Length: 208
Image (cartoon, rainbow, N blue to C red; front, side, top):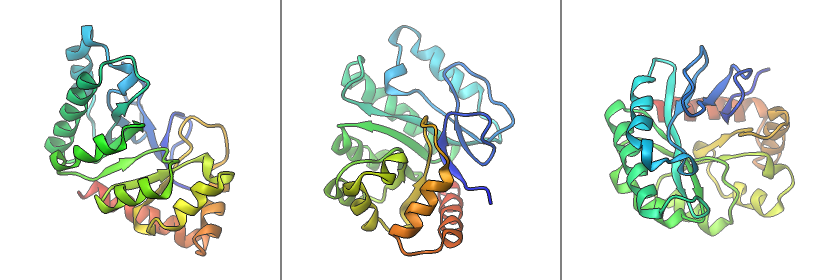
């Protein structure tokens, strides 16, 4: 059984959403496209946006990863402007947004009012209180490898509704099957039903 990998960086994975590398062109896999906060280049910003707009095909599932990162070199105000522009692209194209967020969750929540499409925090690994605030604001949470060993994150997963969950490998080298097995155990659900629910979640976000 192949398991859906919500966010990954390997073209060899056919069942999932490939994060298209900056200035790459789409191949024959489902992908997301966006400007990562650490990849923002003020000198070529318009060129970066042209790259997004010229590489939207039927295989494009989402806009992203994009968002806010407190460790990025780019000034936060610029990051916010670039993030908002990508939210507006997602609104126009009716595609969900895959969000990269580092220590800026409440700022990201403040941008929800601009979004007409679903927003998904990828690689979520924070405490329950942050998850609760995100869930209250109708965000989805995508969990990765940390669930396998982080007990606090496992507790966060317990309070996250099944219809708000995705699972991903991101850029980690491990078998996503192990993640599905772990989450199915934590959520007391069969791995088959977990996978079915995640595919239903995917359809929900694709349909806005």
